[in-house]
Image 1 (cartoon, rainbow, N blue to C red):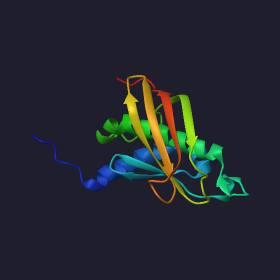
Image 2: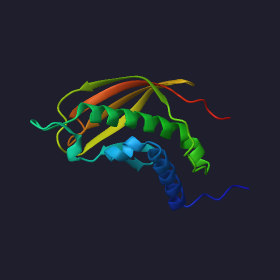
Image 3: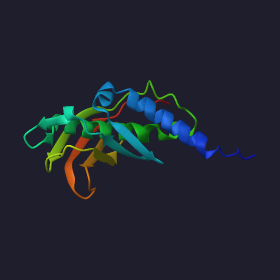
Image 4: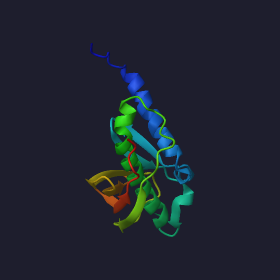
Length: 162
């Protein structure tokens, strides 16, 4: 006999809970105020503007370190989200003990100054093997086609359970 499908709200709540636990596992993300907008399995990272993010008050421009951290965290959360998707869909919501990927290298291209306003980023996995993954991240502010930074990173993935 076929299992009755779950109500949409139950599925959405389970996904949101898993994502919230994942983000809560990175204290620096809370410090910077990074949030994630989830649409199905697609994540958009949001770095809300705050005065503390300004590195050059003469321009003013976002600090390069804050931009780099934002891009790297976007990549890591995307990797975690993709790797835990099946478990979440099967009903497992506790992702608090999930090991994070380890950064092997991360190269950032600062394309233009980040303005004093909200920033957004999306990560795309270019190559994914059992242990090694390559990710590309793009960040923009007002216009998705006018990137202010992009990055490519390589990560060592934690061993899969089971």
